[in-house]
Image 1 (cartoon, one colour):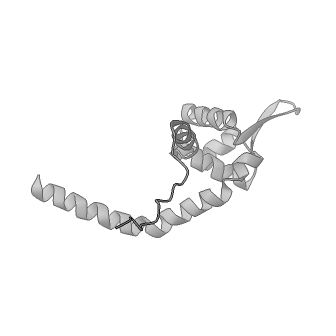
Image 2 (tube, rainbow, N blue to C red):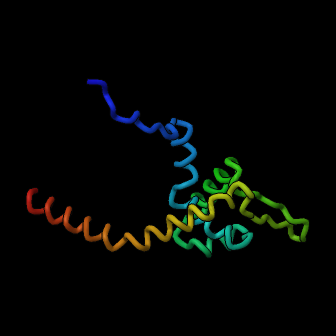
Image 3 (cartoon, rainbow, N blue to C red):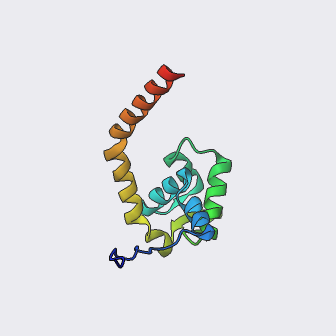
Length: 128
């Protein structure tokens, strides 16, 4: 009898290059920086105040990585003293709906995740 099952759907393949980009754009600091910059352009210290738990080193690294990937633009103003402002780029702005959806999803599902963690931890402590 011939196989009548439909062929499997083939979607986008997650390659090493895809994983690298996702790792760089979706890490914990990048999401927060992009979220903050979607609101308005900010200077470095304004970003530090907006994300108080990030270290200066981590924020610097995150901004450079986001700039390299085209998500953030670094703008040097011609004021005195010279100032640097970070802005979301059009490419970065294209992530805004996805970021908002992820933040909403975490808010909605966090109670379920916390219950699942507690159940798992209880089982591990009983068996271990």
